[in-house]
Amino acid sequence: MAWRRRRGVRRSAAGLACALLATVATGCEADVRVSGPSSSARPSGGASRPAERNVAQARDDLGALRVASQSDGDGYSRERFGGRWKDTDRNGCDQRNDILARDLRQVRKRDDCVVTSGRLRDPYSGRDITFDRSKPAEVQIDHVYPLALAWRMGASRWSEDRRERFANDPDNLLAVWGVPNREKSDSGPAEWKPDEAFRCEYGIRYISVARKYSLPVTRADRDALRGFLDRC
Image (tube, rainbow, N blue to C red; front, top):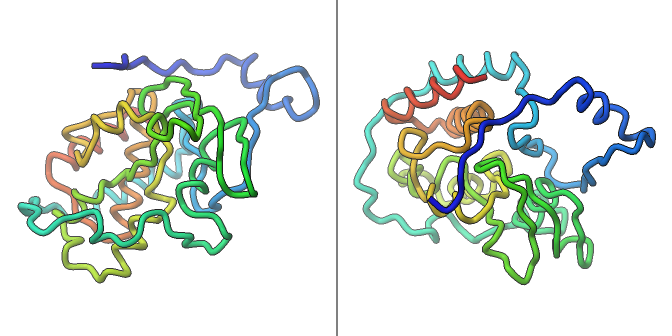
């Protein structure tokens, strides 16, 4: 494996105080937050624990998801989910650049939209990654609930418009390092798992998207997601 998983370390009391006081010039280094899609928060990369109410909601939603088997996936292609990175919120920027602006720190842009550089705390591996537009494959935009898996779980019967909304929904998109993203491919939670520090948040996001689009999960994926929530 090209990257090594590391256990997340809980912030110390001093570290938390530093983060809280960063805005009043205590000398702490604060993230540069750039405006992006408002419907989904920047992934924590294991730096914070999701709110208990979010964990409880995820447990309820997981219990309500239908369990189903995967189809054989005949007929799938990326083009079945419409154009790549549409400007769905009509802010003049495509979804790829919106998600990069949301998830990266120290963001630099060209023409108000195009992200040219930044820093990523990769949620999947816990590593710090430098993004430069000249090497776009280093940081990729992942579908938390993969498109090909969604196709096998029922999206093949959706309208083209619904598939395109799903593919460009910021709630289902994360900026991640290319190495674990290629490993993940179209796997569900039973087959692929992020770094332990991010499994709780990953499970919450996966369940939320499945619930939002009425997508079922396999029995194995449901069991894996329960295990993720047990780590919260």
